[in-house]
Length: 327
Ligand SMILES: Nc1ncnc2c1ncn2[C@@H]1O[C@H](COP(=O)(O)OP(=O)(O)OP(=O)(O)O)[C@@H](O)[C@H]1O
Ligand SMILES: [Mg+2]
Image 1 (tube, rainbow, N blue to C red):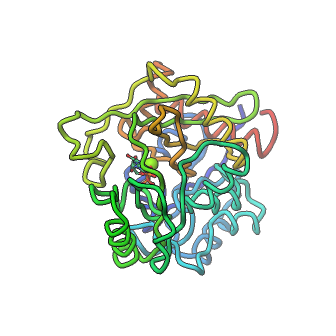
Image 2 (cartoon, protein in one colour):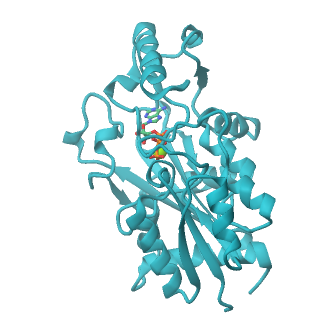
Image 3 (cartoon, rainbow, N blue to C red):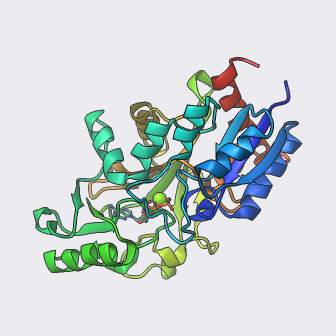
């Protein structure tokens, strides 16, 4: 295998938007080096900084923890004038890991993702995009109210489940006030939760379902992953006993509908009838070694000596093949 020059891009939004903080970026870099490639980390706060760094040496492939440049470390908070890293790389003609610029934009807004999936016949919950002025159009209760463009369960609490129109209006207003964005209101999915990692492309694509569980006593009134339950080692991932085929088929159909590449992770739950429905597709899944769901799932299905190195190596190789052909 030929050695590639790989640049990892991160910045203030690396944790909120992408695979994790600088420690995670360094772990990814070390795993890429261990796979025999050259790899350096670039911290970029805007387009000019990234372009200047990329001009310094030849680059075979970029892998970004940022969807777009942002000074915000606390939330994704997509501004209307966002500059997307994938757009910059397309303009420079540099290949990158992960979905295309257009797919990234479709994934970060959950309403857009749902609409594309619906148009391809892929199951999602009933849903409405609710700017603060029009929440009354929702006619399904209980409803689940969440920010349209966040991650890590930001903005999710017991109050996300609205049993009444008044509770819904209050939560839509909370999301506008605290997170400055529209709310996505979905049918509440009361059943078990799954997350499916999809890695590789074409015939080499692997679709690996995991079930997400939390000790039941940690839930409040509803079995949902609140923001206070994320990133604290509470969630457990296992190979599903039920719905394994269904989860894999749904995830594969979603990837085909959205045009996903290299690595995405798709979250889904059972609806009231026991059918799985997709909640979201993560375009830059978490990569914290041993902690994030993708590395955990990969290790369950690939019990090798160093599953993290194998995971990172597989993602890099499939992107190199996509960009440069069989290597
Ligand atoms: N329609 C729904 N019905 C029930 N629970 C839901 C629904 N949508 C989201 N949830 C709960 O809220 C959690 C966070 O929602 P979601 O996965 O859509 O957002 P996220 O914060 O972007 O997640 P991630 O951290 O995976 O990027 C889910 O893991 C799930 O427990
Ligand atoms: Mg999720």
